[in-house]
Amino acid sequence: MGLPEIDSAVFFGSITMVTWGIWVVLGNAASESIDPRTAAAISYLVAGPLALGFIIVSDASLAITARGGLLAGTAGLFTGIGLISMYVGLSGGSTTIVSTLGAMYFVVAALIGMVVLGDDVTVTRLVGIAFAVLGVVLVTR
Image (cartoon, rainbow, N blue to C red; front, side):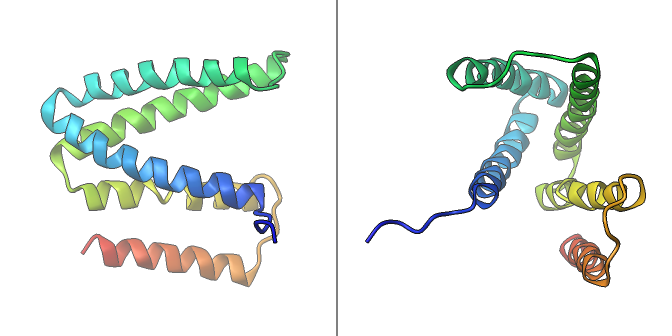
């Protein structure tokens, strides 16, 4: 009997959840030890070569279109802003509050998906978003 097949989205989503959770805790410790802006920069100095190394060892295409490059670069800009914001927030606030609010990025993405990208607006999705917001309210009290 072999191992059950796991959906790749669930597999990689789970890895993301665990590693980002660890990242926030370590980022908090780093922000208490050194300037949070410096800690954020060091994090990206480590993450950048890791991402480039993954491109090299995987079968990733090196073809870049103007649109794709611009979108990826803009995504990196927002990632950097969020990263610095998280480290600065951790240096002066609670890990629980900063990480919980930061983790709500999926609500922003879901709303953009529904309002701008034309994803279906369903009662189930709206209730899910409402529960997520309620969860944040409860965790931050």
